[in-house]
Image 1 (cartoon, rainbow, N blue to C red):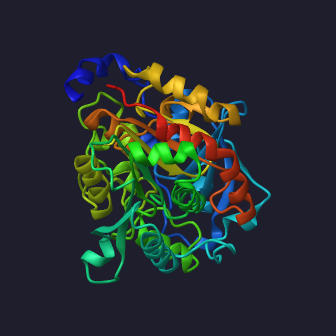
Image 2 (image 1 turned 120 degrees about the horizontal axis):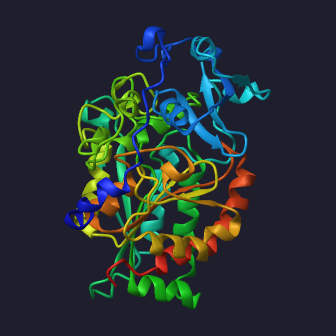
Image 3 (image 1 turned 180 degrees about the vertical axis):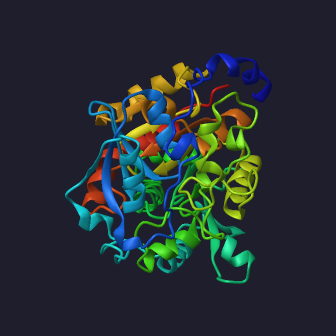
Length: 409
């Protein structure tokens, strides 16, 4: 798969931007106050961009940028006063949003969400209740556990009719990569409950587990999630030093290696205090290594990495506005599923901003899997009643994902 794609990369890449924007004085690299700023001072803002090149520069800066409005030509972000002042000094329009209670760094978990400590016994109970269907395994340690700082494990749930030992295609469902994104973990649990509870009752689900291996990693970034549970509402990365963005840490064009892109795209990836810091090297983080090991072990034909928020289905290649070789398969799957819910669909560069070394690109380029990032909901921490609404909308389409044949089938 890798050999097949490489000759197409140069054609698929975005045209290089013109001269990098000068966020700092005299064209220097951006000078922002980072995560060590007084956290209570951060504000939710809209940043107006005037060109695609400026959009890409802003999204690559390492600021906490988490959304894009195409019609208004704005980025949604959470910035410190120093960051806001720097942008305004450069003539960039920054509008502070009215709902500043959402920007508070310290906030308890909304009622209804399970904690990591509650998740583990729920998984164990599931394995005990459905021994024919569930294989539960501790598949790796988090960064804090490798340092002797916490007893946090990453758990894998393997759902299938295990009495059928025939070779079956595997499907991988990943959640909890970014700590502050609460709904994906809950949605994956609801999917596991549906598959186990309806096996032998619902013909569609029975057929699915009789003929497939469905692998769940419901909470990858356990260390970061525990920080959110303790009140650090906006924590995104793992807890290795200032934190690493696990979804920029995969061993696939890490920091755009091997790709001809502007150097300005790499600045936030190399800043330990930035929100998209990619670590010291490809797959440097134990959490990333666990996910990559699942691809090597199960060779999934389809992989979904569930995130929040924005109602988007993103497919490879994240660093390109051009279609990948199998774009037709992605577009067809999108049209048959979440497009019906009003989701946007495309590569990250097409509908959001360029990314690299993500789960979906790693799955596609290194393992030939149909892979996607599914961004669900309209906030990082919705009321739990909203999670139930999301589940009702998503449920039939998640089953369709699990029934989709691989690219080579």
